Image 1 (cartoon, rainbow, N blue to C red):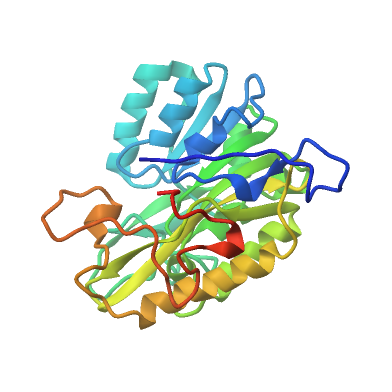
Image 2 (image 1 turned 30 degrees about the vertical axis):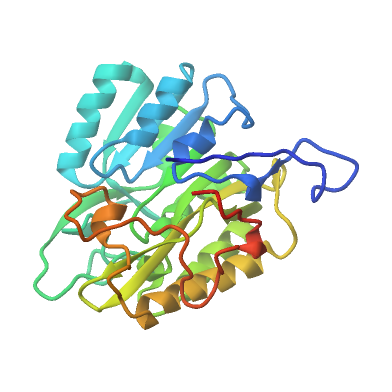
Length: 323
């Protein structure tokens, strides 16, 4: 069951009371729940983005269903997923939904996409530091990539109210493609996958750079939910990730030290992937990705990853009964 708790406070946003949203009070594993929360603003005619659709464009569907005046851009580089999303969104929402067959990156062009749906590092067509590295023998295909700036321009939008970006480790490169939006303060809210292993592979440094990039462009951020970990059969290790919810500091606030806390979390989750020994109680990927239950998978949300984030989660004010 998904859980969402939201609060608006005066504390932490300058004193004396204000209407900024406490970014660390959100608890949700779905971007659409954050975007359509009753505590969030709901501007008429808002343009929202769902980048990285996977098998179903759930966030785009829910945002358009719950906010009839909104428009959505849905972006996906994997052809079958894009085709299915286009059919569903056009049938249900008509011209309120724009579906784009492409990846998102720091500039337009082409890049290799691996079998797991991730843009690849390395290779003549690649640029940037994030994304997945192909395994030996793994096939890839060339796909078009575009930028957030271009997507908004092509949708005849002036600003982007909310963006959910889950692009398998290419989140930082995707944001670098929003130069105009970021420079002019025209991207207000973000919901990002935060997976240090996809972002950086052998190092947590790219995940830290993502946090610093967000800070430098006027955002405050917090984890949207407890980290989720699951077993990686290939390495007998554990992969841990979470999602970040971010808002412009003119609209949201976080308690002092949020950058340091996210930096420590990134390093801890990265260590967990390479140092933790998988046990029979570890979560397997089928539970995370809703694959058929085979008797060996069980959910494990409240897990200590890499020796950090104890189950009480005091650093972020987590409550044991969230999940």
